[in-house]
Length: 323
Image (cartoon, rainbow, N blue to C red; front, side, top):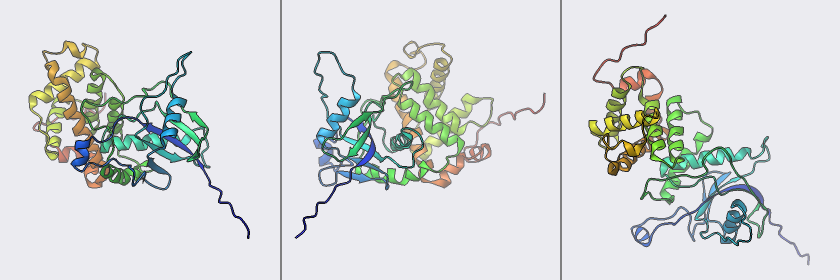
């Protein structure tokens, strides 16, 4: 009788770890379910991408590999990864860590479904994913914020339902967005990666301008009228005072005329986060619908389409031609 040994094949993978707490007991009792759990530890997005509930030891090893070493201090990570975004390393990659850019794009798309704090601090190349003790190479980034800052109180985890929606967005890894949508999409992501509201406000307001401004004059009025009309589609209400305040904050901050703490005459400090969250939520939901519904996304395909679907109460001056 011949003894056959089954050789397990462990593949190299890129891994981005998400830290944090999952659903509370109350949320679970209300039916909330983390995207990965005991009965389903892997959520497949497509053949090369998935979300994985990592083995506790692997999650800890990734954290230790990515954190700086201290001198004469034993600093053990305090929180294991809740889950991780994973992508197989393709044999056809022509440059180092080429596949990481696609994995980051998946994470950015996931933030249109539900914003989470998954950032770039715990990115790694795991040489033998699934092996008992694989070598791990930390992928460290310079020149961009490795952290994502959420509005207070946001749910910082993806649910099973979020995963199903994210699956529908996966084709956008290879599809081309309308230019207006693409600019707004990255403004949304840059805002998520910024800590200070002084930076977040101009980015989010500019995201709406990327989508909806069609003329060079009366840009404040275009923002105010079209954002209010857009918000009606999502049952989010904005007053003229709120939208005027948002644009004034954007202009004062963008042109370095003041800091946010000194603009309480424009909007009381207690309302800064409230107004920002409404704007961010509207931009998030708008972009998500654009990518899920082509007919809605086509409304942003050109100046004429924007003007047709969100007409203004005034006639903007046309750009003069010639000298």
